[in-house]
Image (cartoon, rainbow, N blue to C red; front, side):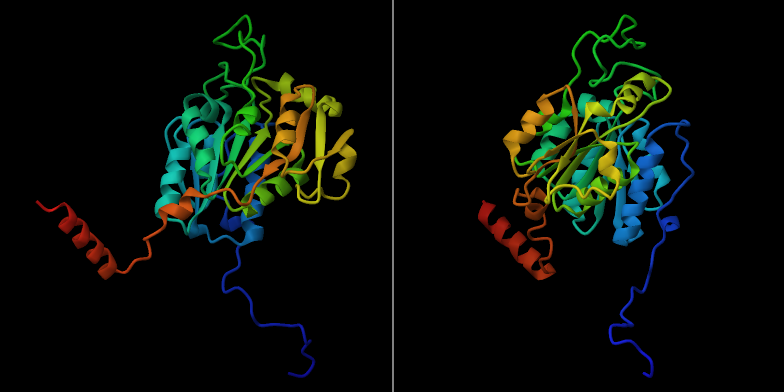
Length: 317
């Protein structure tokens, strides 16, 4: 064709999705909450990856974070308290073709859902898990959660939380067969997007802990971190999270960290004087349970029938 550029192509997507194709109901989180920023990042990752909305599923448990499926124009499952991960694993095991997103919180995941959290990490099924960690039970109005700072007063502990908070990253990095562990803050939008983007691109269970603002009940916790950038430690590495231009200037402390070094990742999260931001650990070779559960799912009807008859003959009396 006259005037047609050599690198021009008619090979385009039959369907192109915009942000509106992923936006569901209007969010009803509190003003100043960090959750809308996380939701926006998820919408953008879905748009940029051009995920089929009908092949995408958002799963959640109970809590402020777990409203996310209502704000996604995809399939969704708003489950029971602490049960987001077993539901997500069940969906993935029977429908490995679906793109699974899990939204959970510090109470939902680390308290009533703790056993599911540990085993889901070990299963390493291909899904993106976002933990909205604000250090409080926000939806039920300020009860102590597993990550509430010690001595912080709550409705259940008016004189302050009695025990030191759980460190979810030391637990996560101690579980066998983990494959992707990252940490980010909700108020750094460019880095939040890049972290969730990298988590979604990873094949296996991507676990992202997001330090999230709750301006209603625990404003002082996140505000203290925001007012003192020295409390954060930005992790840099060619195999880590891409740091957009200009973002590095927002961090006083930088450190190169090889995400394949599990021992060093554990050391970083044990140091509570600073919060490491970025990719802590990645193992692309970790075994995936969903690859095992799909064995036999593509058998023909005759192959299934032959297998059933063989099993009946074996156990026939």
